[in-house]
Image 1 (spheres, helix red, strand yellow):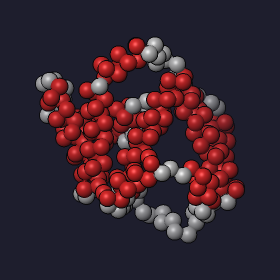
Image 2 (spheres, helix red, strand yellow):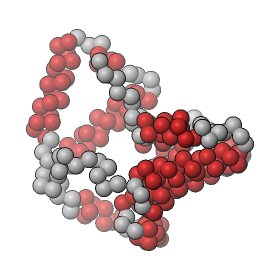
Image 3 (spheres, one colour):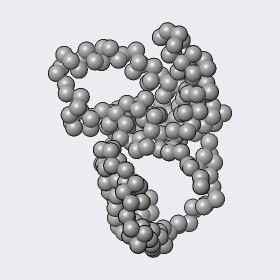
Image 4 (cartoon, one colour):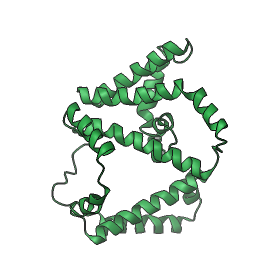
Length: 231
């Protein structure tokens, strides 16, 4: 049969930008590592050339997403963060030691996960805004003039009913439950494959029924549009 490589491994549980890109679009990251980063020398020729290689890879990653300055800026944003983390690694470890931070604690992991997610979300501004000037305007508003009070209203203006929001919440909950077990070493797919055929068929039928009843695509949705169609 066919073997499809894993392409996403719970990226929003990542605790650093480097960790995020090891989990997000794995096949793309692997291709750039094997065909660009390593042939350029990787980390074998000193820190300076390693930083150069990282920035080249992320410049090309930005261009891969779209031949536009916004996507180039997106690539360089990620490359700069990864480079900064590399340069600051020893100092960061010294700070953790001086502050007696237990990096195995749940609180620290939550902090690092949230911090990483915020940096990733900032990077999304580059790909969603029509111009670079709009990106900086959005960043300024986000940092200096956040308005969290409008969030509930914005969610309601998406056109989702209370039932829709409940379905979304249930889906997120299921994903996080599976993620919880996977991150702790449980192979959920392997566990399911080990069940009786009747149990597997039942789970499949229930999943199909859920899609049939709740998978309603409203006006404006184009099923044939590729996710990268606007890149």
